[in-house]
Length: 312
Image 1 (cartoon, rainbow, N blue to C red):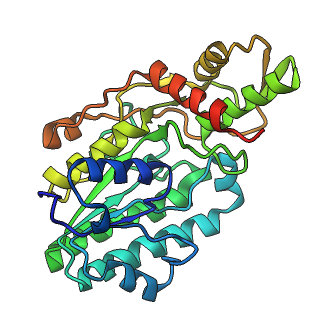
Image 2: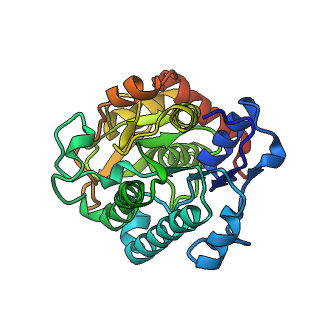
């Protein structure tokens, strides 16, 4: 798909990932006026008439909008996370089909995988069990986009594709402790401890759980490559093919930020999924995507951005 002459809808286009995807579209020669970014204050996409309105006249939909958060937010709002994500995705894809949109790129989540998935996670293991309980409502709501994409392709010929990105990080991330993910949450904890002169920080869980992280600019490039080159029904992992324990992650953040205090682990809090790492070979084979950013480099850029932009 040559993107230059396409009218593109990017839901969530003003958000963390979306802002980088939009930059990539512009770099590919898509004129600014051809990119539509509906704002949630104006267009609540859980409402059908808004979905109908935003897809009108579009050739391509990249659906990034989601109600997301870390373990705490998932535990607090399982109903909201399920309903909002399910309704946005289902209605937007149906509206896109009715509007005869050429292609629909659906962004799923690593939370869709079963709790106990052999590492590295392969796409064919996606249905072999129930997701980790704390984020299952969110993971399953996003997983329904895959079911819908495959069903709509079969019945209506809609070119809908589905990506499974791993945890993202980078500049412009959400650092609000109420609903941030692990990397921004830990960076903020360390920065606050330093600013307040505290000699220790508290962290959730045991630190033994592992995660994989993909730098946001790499993720944006992967999404654009998929949009240009991939037209099959099978889901595709989007990751960096690395794995780090939360303990090692926090120690690395402390080192990069010059914090030498004690780390106190609160094991009464959940670890979440025990291990996470993706097999990324399908993305490389199908549309030539391979993550480029070294983890330490990406982490340093994220820390620098936060320290420069955080409120006084």
